[in-house]
Amino acid sequence: MFMLCIDFFIYFLIGLYMDKVIPSEFGQRLNPCFLCMPSYYSCCRSSRHRPAVAEGEAGEQLLEEEGDQFEIA
Image (cartoon, rainbow, N blue to C red; front, side):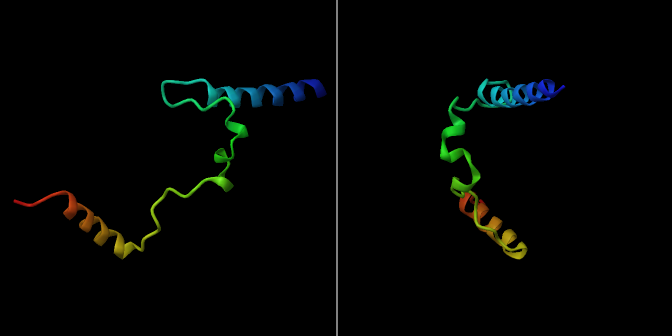
């Protein structure tokens, strides 16, 4: 019974790894050595998101961005 539990966790981890490495129709595959790269872990990722904006400022910012892209004739 003990070996069955160990085998379950080993195959589960291999399945998770293969799901990330083998490409599928719904996503991209990762590099086979992605676990060794520091960019994979959240503590080492750089923030690529926009800074947080207050609710009232979000609408104004959206209007400003739309005005930059479109001209009203």
